[in-house]
Each structure stands twice: as C-alpha cells, then as structure tokens.
Image (cartoon, rainbow, N blue to C red):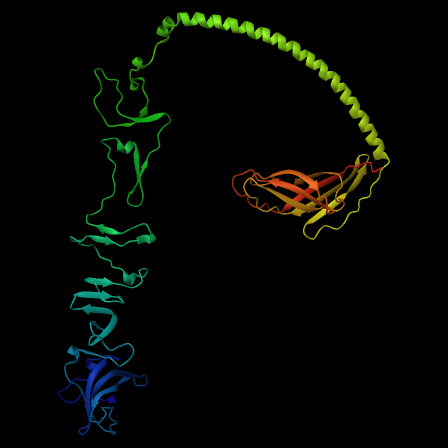
Amino acid sequence: VGLTGATDGFSSFSSEYNHGDIVFYAITDGEKYEVGSGIFTVINNDLDNTEQYALQRHSLKSSNTNNTKIDFLTGPKEVFVTYPATHSVYHAAGHSSDYPTPEDKGLAVWSSRNVLNYYSSLKWDDDFKCLSIQQATDAKYGVDVGGDSSEYHSRIRASGYYVGDVGVYFRANNGNDSSYQGGTQFKHFLPNTIDTTTYASLVLNLDGDVKENIKFKTQSARYIFAGPQDDCAGGCPDDYPRFRLLHIDDIPDLSSLYTTPAALEAASGVLKQQAEDYTDAQVSTITTNFDNLSTSVNTSIADLETASTNQTQSIEDELDLFRDMIATKTKAVVLEEASPLMSGIASGIACGPSGCSVTKSVTSTVPAIAANDIHYQGFYVSGVVAGGDYAVTISPEKALTDKIVLTYAFPSDTIDDYVSGVFYNPLGTTSNAQAEMNYHIHAKAIWQDDT
C-alpha cells in the first residue's frame, strides 16, 4: 500500500523509518483489518525530486478466516504502528532466509535498531551456565568455542588472561606430536637465563623462540672443564668450575704407585749381568745356525738354476711346435646381428698367428646381487663358437657401484655367440642394480691341433 502522509495527531512513517526498515503494522479501512510485519519503502521520483512511500505487507492476522492478507478496495486506509517506532522490538522470523526461526537456547542478536535476529552458532545453556560458539555439540565449559581451529572465528584473543587454580590444560598430541601426552600448567612461564656469577655463561648458551634450548659453547682445543687451579700458597679456596688449560699442579703425587729409574737400577744389578750372559749365548747360537742355513740355501739355488734351465728349454720347444701348428690352421668366424635382448656394436674380427679374436660392445644392466653372492650375466657376442677355447675379457665402460667385482669371464659350452661374466658382491648387504652401461667384450680363440 502507498503511504500518503500522517493524519492529525500522528507522525509519518518517513520521520521514524528509513528505506528497507522492517515495521510491525496494523491497517484497516473501517470494515476489514490486518496486522503483520512489513518493509518500509522509499521511492525517489527523479522528475520532480520528490519521494513516495509505500509499505510491503506480510499478514500475521487479519479479518479473513485464514488470516491472509486483505485485498482492500481502492480508497484511504489507516496504517499505524502500535507503539513508538524508536522503541519497538520484534523479530522478523519467516520474513526471509536472513531471519531464521529461533530455537531453544538460542541467543537474540540485534540485526537493526528494532529487529532481533537469531544465529544457530550462538547458544546459552541455562542449566549448565555455558555459552557455546560454533560448537556442534552441547557446551561443557563456561565459554565453549568450537569450529575449525585454522579459522580465526574459532580462536579467542584478549589483552590478558586470569588463570585460576585449575591452570591451563594442554591436550594430548598437540602440535601433531604423537608422543605428547598432554597436561596442565599451573605456574607462569619465564624464559631460561644463564647465571654469570658461577661462570655458567662461559660454558652454556641459550637458543630457541623462548630460550628453551640449552647448548654448550664452543671451547678452545686442549681445554678441560675443571675446578680452580691449585697454585695458591697453602691451597686455593673453592670456586666454580670453568674451561681452562690443564696445569702440572692438577696432577696429584703418584710417587707411591711407581718406582724411579735410580731405584730400579740399584735393585736390578744381578738381573742386568744375567741378561748380558744370556744375550751372548743366544748370539753365538744364532750365528752358527745362520752359517748352516746359508750353505743349504746356496745348494738349493744351484739346483733350482739347473731345473729352471731345463724347464725353459722344454717350454721353448713346445712353443715352436704350437707356432708351426697355428701357421697351418685357419678358422672362419662369422659375425651375426646382436641379440634383441641386448644392444651392442661388433667392431670386427681379427686373426693372427695365435688365433682369431672377437671385439664387441654390449649394453646391459646387472641386477641387484645378494650379500656375499655371485651373479652370472650373459652377453651375446656374434662369432664365439660353443665349446671353443677362448680367452674372454669383459670391461665395463665405467666403475661398478657398491664395490661389485667383475671376477672373470668364459664362453658357453652349449650356446653359440654367448659368453658369461661373473659378478661378485663382497658386502654384507644386497647391492643396488647397476646402471645400464656398455660392456666391452674381447674373445680370443686359441687353436687346437685337431689331427
């Protein structure tokens, strides 16, 4: 409804309310009536710079049987507030979602000069005299604040706190420390200090946010932590310990625990002569034994020289025979493609008087090896014949880790183009797998006389 102005003896709505204020009203046309809450609205007219006023109505009770809003006929109606607007107090539950219906134990909070609102996060338990804020369960303490601890509205700030005889309780596992069992602090805290009178400040140092860490200070080399130095006539008075150099007077008299060199010499004259006689006799015996041993060694050397000469001649004769055999032998070695299990590049096959050799680089990965165990790693090398006589060497392109040792290599007795390397783990723990790398393989064939 529109509000045209105040009747005699009444004030206008606009003199007490602002645009958007909620009012408790009564309206009648002399025949029908309606009581409810509404919103006072100010409509500005930009054309003539005037204001018009209206009241949006929400019926609570009316002359309709169902208390719905009256559909008044066109014409003047009387609209009024039943008590002074500046002192009116009411709640607007149901008017909008901003004004929920109050619940038991809820606290009333001023939403405007006249309207009381209700917030479910604030509750008062009169039985236990507890005020709860953001607490999902019933309050247990005088002021019980709940909610997410990371949010500021779940914390309390004050310029000071008075702590009574129950102290301050710290719950278990605070600070995500599972070993902390919690507890109550009854006395105030003061940061640690280090006394200077007793020289503790020369030894200790404090660190941390509240000086909670007690540490030793660094000291010069050869310093010891000891009491006062005893260099005073008649003895020095007791004093506080400190770090200082060791002094000769710090060592007590220990003469009753050992014998001086002079006393030892006087008491050992007979022993000295006996030792000299015994030494002379042993020297004579050793000299005789050395002469006999020297003669025996010279004879053995002469015999070894004769045997060595004969053995050398025999080896030379066998080598000549082997060279003659190699000169009449040839053997073909055919290079093949690398196994798909391992990648590598064969650099070639070379033959000479002493046989043919295969050289190849193979990329492979050696797995982890158990403690004090060996691992046989196979490599495909085209040109190596199964069961043949080869001198095989395998060299990694870089150092093996975890102290793994590549001990020796040998060709396969049953598989062509296949050699094996023996890797040994000398450690007491399982090694890590080796990084993928190239292994340079050289297999040299040694001919045998098949005739």
